[in-house]
Length: 266
Image (cartoon, rainbow, N blue to C red):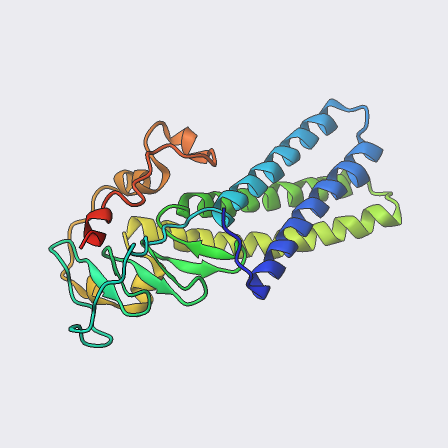
């Protein structure tokens, strides 16, 4: 498991968990139990909100604390003295390059993260909200985190607005918590929807955000016919029925170092 000692990332993680726990507390103990204690509708809403919050936290944990796709460092030093500084020479037909910061070989579309100080396969970006990179091995969990946060925001906002109509006479505490929940739901909902759309586009275009921003050699290559969108999504979410893609667990065998070991035995 990983944990970056980055102040910005730590603050963002604390804020994320604080708002999710506040959402759960306010919906369950401030609104549902006092107003819908003996109602089947209240029990159903409590189960739904609790499930969404749990899936959000679990997806966040998988994205934040596990390997995003770090390129393994060589077991012994490799002499790059004959390589020009800042030169990314292809090592084979598959586009392997040399990272002058890690002093290691890396697969195509791998990029160096200045915060993690490591190269990451298919690096999309470093996200402070998970205090980790978004790469080949955790992009699925990052997308699921965005998805469940967005669903939770929409559901909680709808529930709060419904409760204001059905129960117009509320206590001051209920009104304050309802206002805070509405603000959190709107702000976080809009934020994660925007990032979610970017992530979906990066999958369908088979180009990460950093590929587009850097306009590197891979990005500038001649246009190629992309596989069907379903194939590209399966590369990220794994095989099996699409409904299983919503589960924050592994559905494919990891190939973290299988394609890189030979490059290090030199």
